[in-house]
Length: 322
Image 1 (tube, rainbow, N blue to C red):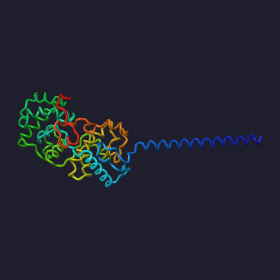
Image 2: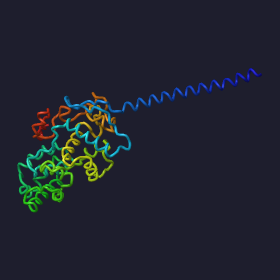
Image 3: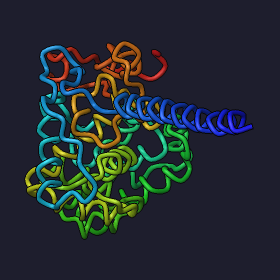
């Protein structure tokens, strides 16, 4: 009887040991699996450059929680420097020859692509080259020209209205002050800064959808209101950098850091990006997601700057040509 009791006592002990061993194995496997998952989303120490000859970021600088303001400023400025090397030819992607053409084109770019605007404005400016001409235009004729840009009735009202305001209030000249520009029909702060930065050389930050998306991914600010984003990001950079910064961020958003499928695997600033891994990380697959000159396709301007063409960029086709 004593021997039987000893056997029974030993059995539970063996069973308990086996259970502990199994649990330990499972825990170990889980830890290894978790580590593997984490490792897969960490940016490489050397990110693949988006273009041959452009150096990739060299060190991992993924920001920790509670990043100090000083560290944020350094990281943000480094991202801008890296993007300046990737897009040395960055420029406004609207065709224009003077401030009037730029303000009209920017108003027309709402809810459509710069390409569509660039394909539409040649006919508009050929018929109405000055504010005086457009102010006196027949709305129905303007609507027909602007139809390809979408929301053409509202846009017709805006461009005719702003042309009348230019003639009546500013002597037919586009004003070079923010407070005057935002009084024009259809012109908000975003449009005003595009005009100030690119037609007058006065620094401004353009907070469009691409800019908002990227600064959120980079954790430059948690603000969602465009005006507050403008103020928060502006505080990270010298005022003289604002216009070029806007071009760099917007160009990167249009070519690599897309809204739905960012091409993380070929992003030159991947080591600096807190959101690395949200998109495709395999370099070969990511390469197929590149757009415009980065993917070997035409750009958005029919008349791009020579620097863009020298870098391998291609002019966009005119309306109806593709």
